Image (cartoon, rainbow, N blue to C red; front, side):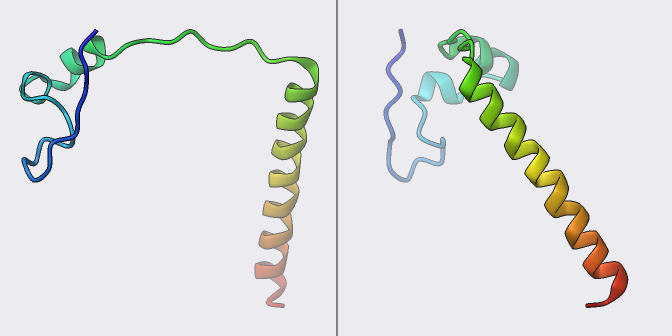
Length: 69
């Protein structure tokens, strides 16, 4: 595995010179990949409740902007 160290002031964004020379598609294939985690029931429930809360609050903001309050 390639060790990524941050080098100060070289403008490479913290990548080794070998990685800084790669094109974006090549860089994506050089980075390590991690599999997705499978979520359990409470985690799925929490994420769906946050999505519903977000939609509800978006509707509240739109209503408040519409009525001018």
